[in-house]
Amino acid sequence: MKRKRDQGTVWERATPGFDAAVLATSFSGRDPGVRPKVYLQANHADDVIAAVQRAQRENLKISLVSGGHSWAQNHLREGGLLIDLSRLHQIEIDEAAMTARVGPGCWSVDLDIALKKRGLFFPVAHAPDVCLGGFLLQGGFGWNGRQLGLACESVTGIDVVLADGSLVHANAQQHADLYWAARGAGPGFFGVVVAYHLRLYPHPKVTALMFQVFRMTHLEEVFRWADEVGPNVPRSVEFQMLLTPKALGIFSPGIEVIAPVLADSWEEAREAVSFIRDSRLRPKASFTLPLLPMSTVLMSYGASLTHFPDRMRWCADNMWTNAPIEDLLPGLRHVADTLPPAPSHALWLNWQPPAERPDMAFSMEANRYFAVYGEWKRAADDAKYENWATGCMGGMAAHSEGIQLADENLGRRPARFMRDEKLAKLDRIRDKYDPEGRFQAWMGRIQPGP
Image 1 (cartoon, rainbow, N blue to C red):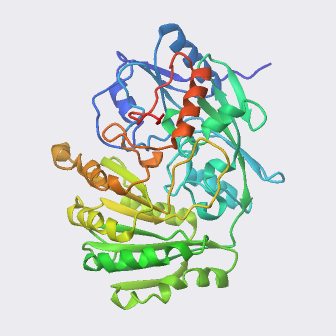
Image 2 (tube, rainbow, N blue to C red):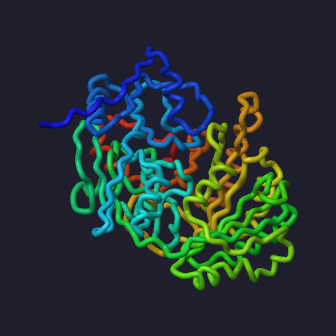
Image 3 (cartoon, one colour):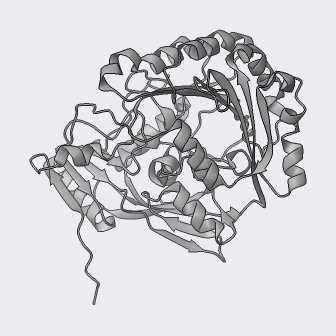
């Protein structure tokens, strides 16, 4: 006899508490002023299938949310059906096979903790409460990603509900085109992934952090140095810099040089960060913390508390760039000089991608990544800050290769997020699996060239 499972909660617009329930799906504290017609909190895949079938019957567009970390609040659209996958948070680990099956609502930190207990690892998101659903669809820039690759490269299969309500498994052998699309389509994916099948790795023996702070007056020197050393930074190091109005330790505008290291020994880790320890700029730093042991869990929560607090009002934008540093410095200085109050910040990431990736929808990256995050609390300040990120990245657009979907601002500033030929292929696959356009796509896009 089958065990009965509780059905998911369905909220109609007239249901008391509907507005609060819908807005609670978003990490951002902003109310974009739009509402779905129907909101479903799914408990399992059967709820998702029933919801998609209802959308077909009633001709409703479908939008999806797992963790709600979209700065642009991509899942909040006018009308249609919103499916909330946050309760699909199962974690099933096969230690011997070094594989896992996880739900889209699984928090990154929960998977990280569960795997560490078994001596295993997966490149989960840097923020603890980012759910795997959206994270893996957009590519997945996770811990140790410079060594292990994008997280989506370690997705071996997906269980996905299609626009016709059918549940299929897609991998490299079956529904291979759907599998191709799921690794990089982001919020433009045309199905509901109810489970991800993952390849796991041995847990690094050493996880540690080195930290350094400069005053903002040194911006040009620091970025020239970062550009110089960037190509030779070991892949075990996630070399990044934050521009912040309230840098740690000096509590004033500054540049935080952050270097998480995931290595196989302390000797390797110390050598990996020698480019900071022995830097010619070190005498100009306000202070330098030595390499200290620190778990990815602790680093995740630290970054979240200081730079990504919950229920703020957000504007974010980004770019990939290979431009000469001298061309970028005026834009970087403008960002630094116009930053909204803390915890607003800007991120410079030394990425240096490999020469080749597996064939998949994800296809936009460059040697450096730059993203800006404006944050404020009061609705009265919306007009003051809401266009800051858009203006900053618009002003630097001539030096951009494109954007990544994790920090997209496509509703305000459409930009390239995929190579033209990949986007054209993705459109063809969408036409095959979702010919009626049942699933919402990106909030804006640039059409592929001829």
